[in-house]
Length: 555
Ligand SMILES: Nc1ncnc2c1ncn2[C@@H]1O[C@H](COP(=O)(O)OP(=O)(O)OP(=O)(O)O)[C@@H](O)[C@H]1O
Image (cartoon, rainbow, N blue to C red; front, side, top):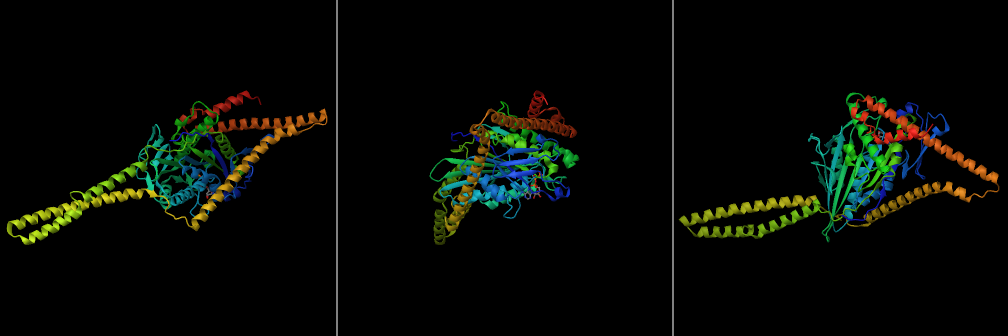
């Protein structure tokens, strides 16, 4: 593995879906405003009493409104990450948000070309790269799992009903043992695997979403790459995560099984929140071990990975509280720092094992074809015996016939053995993909140029947002420096205005803390209602911290 360590923040993107028919029928108003050029989301509080309760403003690496396309989100956020995975980095994209806000729409999307989501678009990018990269051998495999009611299930082998276990090994991190790994030779193979897994995933109808995902799903892609000239193998791993939606029992009206599911979903998401909080606060202890979800995402949050969090929200007034919770979560995740390292010179690469086994089989076939029992020699010997037998009679002839039969048997066995080895060899060779299947013609060249242009536009857009945010930050301090006061009265006036602005800011921070506290009480009540004793008595560090702050500040 290479050693150049880079600290890199988790990239946080917010996407707001269109208002739904149901929300319009319920006469909800639209309370979310999206400012893509500034990376800003503004949410109006429909129940606001005073000014400091009114609008909440959050800033992110990118924001997308209801008109945004699947293509723009992919090109501007995910495409550069997948390109890094193809260079040997680990990458992770995870969609987080309230139930029914578009996580599955964003990750999987729909079948038509325009609405395909991140996962199938990533397949396409990976295979178009492989098909135009000459001189490299690839071994590509996928795994697909879900965490349902805190149990891990294999979505590609649904008949294996036994829950799978998590293991941890030095150098390999946390992984799921006995999870089926399927090698792929094309984008179509990956689509097939995704569809099989989606079919096996646990879904159900809730008040909030007719096709609600009731589990956290992780689609894992591993790409091993070996340049023909070099002996070393690089490996990129991509985790594509569609989390189950957070939800309020009071809103979903869940009872029975649905309630039990909801309580497990909320508990795992609460552990995720605690991990994000601890990382953002640089805590000494990060509670990864509190849930299977956080253990599996350990590398993606605070570890060796380039990570994008997509926070999905809805625009309607009825979901104001949930929207704010998601935005706070997402805001906190921005300060998580990862240390992505290129996985080069991978020691236990499957590709190396495969190449060695292929070479061994080739040698074996060659030996068998040229050795004592080689089919050509045996054929010749049989022909000689045939000729000799026609010249002899009696016992001699019987002897020749016996010998001939023996040789025929050996010939058959030898052919069978070589056939068998050949079949095995072809099976192994098929698992590997030789890059550069597509000749670089004008169509391909255009495609490459188009991709480069998209990448440049995306990078420019990102830079513009960053610059705009920097500008807004600096504006306030510069204003004071630039100001020339004609007299003392003017200076006093200016400073009074500034004090007023700071006071409003302070009020809104106090309000934020108060809201967090109310939120905590609500959530605790819901956990208590769902009879989850463990969750009821263990106070998450995030909330206990809020209580501390609440006690310090006098209202
Ligand atoms: N950006 C969007 N544009 C158009 N329709 C959308 C968009 N986002 C979501 N939808 C629609 O909203 C509905 C709910 O979306 P989806 O099932 O993806 O939500 P979810 O967050 O995955 O929910 P859950 O957590 O319950 O699984 C779907 O009918 C989906 O097609």
